[in-house]
Length: 253
Image 1 (spheres, helix red, strand yellow):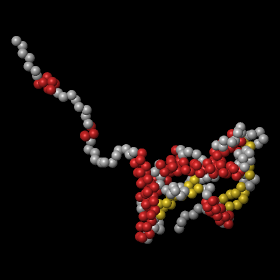
Image 2 (cartoon, rainbow, N blue to C red):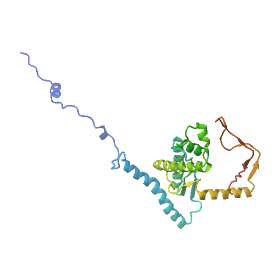
Image 3 (cartoon, one colour):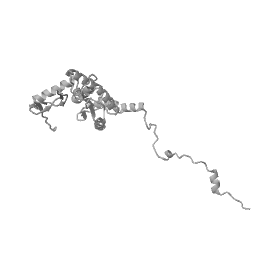
Image 4 (cartoon, helix red, strand yellow):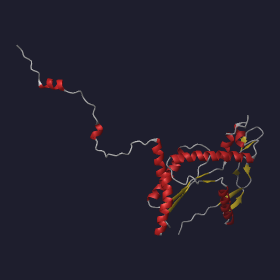
């Protein structure tokens, strides 16, 4: 009579447990930390304030004091003069490139032990803002696009008020986005070219340039504003005179 004896392989197969899901995380030699992998929205805002707003305020107060006590403030200050964006619309990739690169420069100087200063600003004058403000007016009626952009039938003072309102609204919107990117600076005290004190100082600088002879009249053509003719067609009249401004560059001794 043939007797079948179970082999060791069969016995092992009979007693084998079902395969368990491998925990590959335990095979990695990583440091243990209670720091969350992904912050919540509230935590992200807290971190942003600490790394941007609070850091900027801290260094302005504490680093300035320490440099003065050591007598080393001279030569250890870094000021970034902001070339301002137009206050005429939503932010885009160009704004991100501009502001983030500036923030990298400011933070690199801060890391070198310098007292940094960055006061952001906005350009609130010019044709781009006026065009955007006029296009947004709801009382333009059946005017053509060219007529709207030229402000046909609208007093100049009203155009300026409309443009100023648009600029103020846009500044608040853009500033919120810039701060959300973690860019540090004096966001609560920016400069705006439409502020009266800025315009007064600008006229003072222009007066000094005239005194030094760096501003002189010329007979070159200069496009100064769009206009609409009787047929509603846009054309660009030419000004008979313009101003030429000369800038002198020199290296500090």
